[in-house]
Length: 290
Image 1 (cartoon, rainbow, N blue to C red):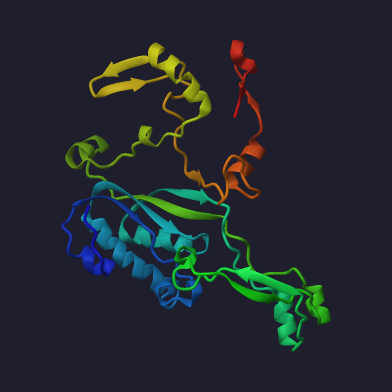
Image 2: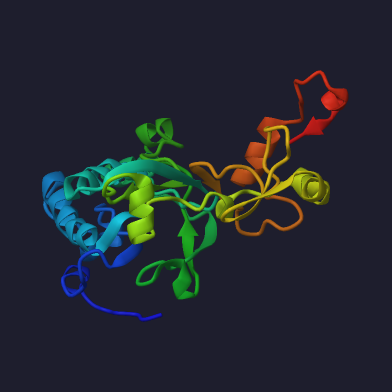
């Protein structure tokens, strides 16, 4: 593996046409995170979209026909990213939603803003510790700091708007699944460039039920073709290697071990899905499944 550091647009110009098999990138979102210049919107939507489209056109040039890419974006400006990708010439194949439970809300306390506007000083009611995320985010391992808590509103309007904010807590991000247009048929493209498809079996989601039955399916339902061995259940309802990968991904919250913490997306999904029974009239129709 070779790591090249530098301006992405300039580095891309040094690469050969049709020489790259895949792309994974998380470009800026254009929201000026922590007032950072690198995340500037470049002057507005049109300027930002054109800026990213110029870089992605170089990505398109160096990628092989049929090569796929995953491009990160935030929900607020995800449509900007998608537009830039289409302007660059990529096919939008899908959008993967990644759900997580550790997002930090970026909201303005309206009650506090009103007290400040009217010059009302709140009493100190205690202290709290906050993480310094400047200059490197949570990975910077900077020590937390102690600040004063001034929770009780003073002005009548501040009291009326106590509990009001300006934003929701983020809990998902988008990943655009893109592909450089293929040349000819998909079969010809794969034979020529080795790109164009997704390794579905390599990304299947294993389940406890499938793991338990794996040995049975191996012995009962194996056939061989000209490219290797494929295993099937024999009834067409599921695959011994796991469920087909979907366009939604879940991450456990930090601290989840034997039991999920409150707010964990995995826990929320499991609690809402409940126990399901199969709908077939066979002997196993009363078996329970997740």
